[in-house]
Amino acid sequence: MGYAWMARALIALIGFSSGFIVAGGVVALIVGLGIVTRYIGITRTADRIFWCEDAIFLGAVAGTLLTVYNLRLPLGEWVLGLGGLFVGIFVGSWILALAEVVNVFPVYCRRLGITKGLSWIVITMALGKVSGSLLGFYMRWGKG
Image (cartoon, rainbow, N blue to C red; front, top):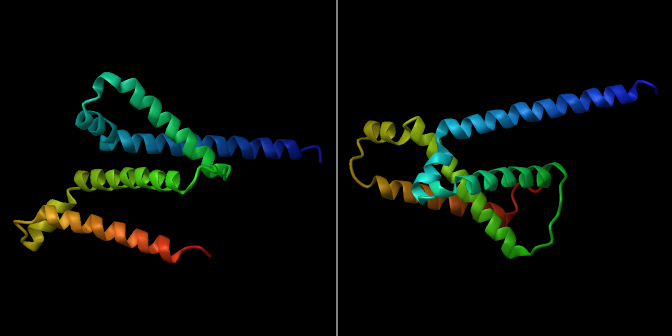
């Protein structure tokens, strides 16, 4: 019984350190892909860089608190839909940034001989992803 607090403290230290390592890796990936700088460049908000950094930090803290502590916020379904929209935009941006870094689309288009209609291909891929997600939510797939 006397050493139980030491074991708990060691586990807490390992968990805290692991969280720092994973967070550092995610930040390195975001910076390496240039997602933040692209967003700031596209939106022409370089004069408000500190607001962007604060929003990223607060979003990370809020996401951590909501997922680690399984908090429930009774804000209504429209807030859930709005949050889902923002999460979808964020994940889609990550996918496109990663695809751009590894040059997936040019390689596929060159190998398949596609010279026209690339924008339509990307749009149909996005629509397929959205409709598949909506169908999954409607059918409640993944809810054990």
